[in-house]
Length: 117
Image (cartoon, rainbow, N blue to C red; front, side, top):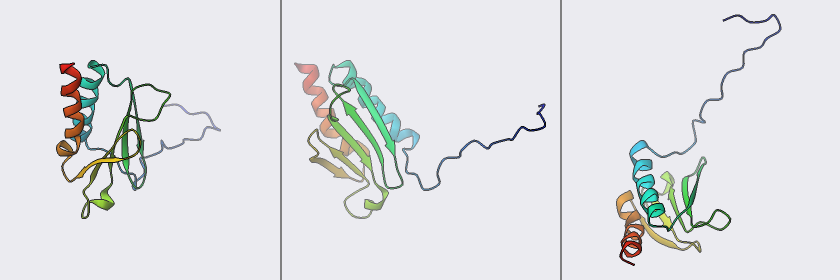
């Protein structure tokens, strides 16, 4: 590598150590459900947010409205209500728990209804 005399090397910003994220298998399960909901015509867009308190996956029917479903991973609630929370379109808690598959179950049931229609 050749550098010019006045060039300054800037390090690529590393991931924040205190940022919460999804593990590969968790994200795979969420995206699998998302893909099936898209195929059923229920969802069209998604967003993810990673903060120091939570990792959030939100699914939208249309991009310009509030999310139809939101899955949050909050490690601070691990020992109380459970690491995972599923919120509905109006912000109501649909399910809480320690197991992601159990928390996603209401959305799985909705998917079965959408396919039957």
